[in-house]
Image (cartoon, rainbow, N blue to C red; front, side, top):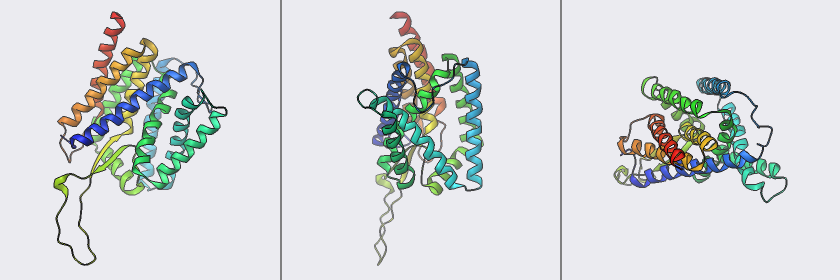
Length: 290
C-alpha cells in the first residue's frame, strides 16, 4: 500500500466528498443560471469537447512554460483568480436559497479563501478549499458535454496521464515545482509521518531530531474529471446512475492506493476511468431496471 491505512481513508474520503458535492452543485445549476457570466453557450457537445481538449492542452503548456521561466507570481495570480471564481460559484449554489446579494457574498468568500490558500498556506484550509473548487468548475463544463464526449475525455486524459507520469515524467516535475517553489499544490495534499520514518538522532547543542515527512497527494485533474463524468450521467439518466459512477470510480482510486507502492509515482486516471466505465455500465442497468 502506497500510504498508511488512515491516510488512504482520508484521501479517499476527500475524493468522495468532493464528487458528491459536485453532483449537488450541478443539480442546483440545472435549475438556476451560473453567476458571473459563466453560463455556457448553446453549442453541440462535439464542438464543446474539442474546445475543452484544446483548452486543457493550452493551459498545461502555459503552466509548464511559466514553470520553466520560474514565473511564480504569474502562476500564483492565475491560480488565485481561478480558485476564487470556482469557490464563488460553489458557494453561490448554497447561499442563493436564503440570502440576498449572494453573488457578491460568494465572490468575497472566494477571494478570501483563495488568498488564504495561495498566500497564507494552511494545510487544513488548503484541503477544505479543494473540496469547494472542483464542483464549481464542473458546473461550468458539464452542460457542454454528452455522455459519449465525457467518457471519451476520460480515455484521452488517462492516456495523457500514463504518458506524463511514466514516460515524459513531467507530471512529477510539475508537482515538485508546485510544492518546492510555489509552496502550493493543485490537488489534495496531506503530509504525514510514518512510524519508521522517525530517525533517532542524538541531540546536540542547537540541533533537534530530524523527521522525514511523507506526502500523500491527489492531483486536481484526478478529482475534476470523474465529477464531469458523473455529472453528465446525472443530467441524462438521473441520480442513481450518477451515484454508481461516483462510487465505483472511488473504488478504482482505492484499488490504486492498495496496489501502489510507496516512493513511486502512478497515474491515477486510468484506475478512476476504469471505475467510471464500470459505474456507467451499472448506471445503465439501473436506468433500464428502474
